[in-house]
Amino acid sequence: MPISTKLTRSLGITHPLIQGGMHYVGYAPLVAAVGNAGGIGCITALTQPTPEALQKEIRTCKALTKKPFGVNLTLLPALQPPNYEAFAQVVEDEMASGQLRMIETAGHFKGLEPFVKKFKAAGAFVIHKCVTIRHAKSAEKIGVDMISMDGFDCAGHPGEADIGNWVLFAKAARELKIPFVASGGCADGKQLAAAIAMGAEGMNMGTRFMATTEAPIHHNIKQALVDADEHSTTLIMRSMRNTERAFKNKAAMQVVEIEKENPGDFSKIAHIVRGDNYRRAFQETGDIEEGVWSAGTVMGLIDSIVTCQELCDNIVAEAEEVIKGRLSSSVTFVSDDDEGSKAPPKITPYWLLQYTYTDNVLEKRVPHRPEHLGLAGKFKSEGKLVMGGALGDLTGATVIFRSKEDAEEFVSQDPYVKNGIVTGYEVKEWSVV
Image (cartoon, rainbow, N blue to C red; front, side):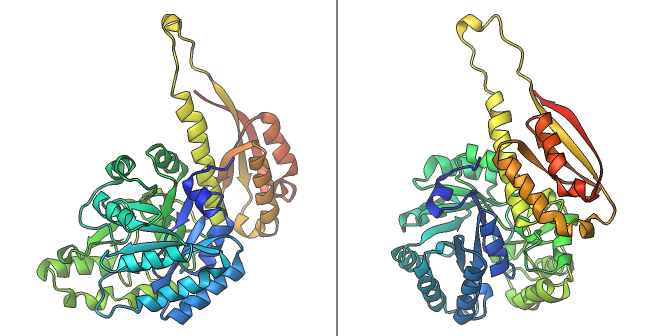
């Protein structure tokens, strides 16, 4: 059953998941894949070299999906600022069809208000990224529809206040008059359930969407995210009060050392942090040590490269299970009369299906994968399948079902079983207190 929030209802999407703007990642193929998976993705406007190129990218996205999508427009300090007005005009023009309906803004407030008014007048749903409650309240005053509260865990620019999500989300729920989504360090269903419990209307993810099949970046970068952990980032440009959380590679650590010797002097690091190094590593060489590129501590939760459909479905299924299972079963209502005779905890039985895969599964499963995923989707929509997925090393898979009969029915219809991709399986009871 889909999770319905103010985010999903406002944008007409299935899952409360946003793929936020990311330089040299937020292109049409990824954005369309996220939309087709039930979430909503953002094309990164300023990754495009010109307003005309942005218009072409938006139209490419429209050709790849009929689902809603968004554009990210970030206003940041620059030696040669882009023509923001021209980029904004393209966005406004392309909103006429109604498919481009969300604008994610970020950056400085000095020039933000005219753009918010422009986008709102054209019918956009505007979400602004903020790293403090003070900034969120300022955005609220100028009329944005929703806040993306970006905690210190995030990739890219976490601001200078260093406020973590645990406090930031709780305070946003207390003090903001408009809704917000959780951002920074988000990757799985437990976090989505926690975010909703803390008052958020969904999650905004960046780094986690980089490690997907459809992300248009070099495979080496994706694999680096899988191989890394929560300790694999560093903070640069702190001395310039323009802090960025980046992947801890040779280039980033070189910047850290130069800053120690030349605090506040951007000219000393400009040749290392320039955007073309970033672009070349992502789009051409795949050299993870080249350039300074954004990544979040959420790498500690990334253990595989999956499709956007698998990622979104797994996150929502896990969140549903936490909300309906763990959270609801954790609350016990006891009357005064029952105080002396509390019943034992209720045991909810589920059934675990464990597959063993053949060798070379990546190649052998290709012709049967659409039918396999379709079968899983059907069982999930019917409430028979709770959650599951392939093991990280692709030696097998684990899937949780509501009943033994459901698991056995799935096995009898699964093309992976019929075509020898599955070499063995076991169905066994799995109980959660």
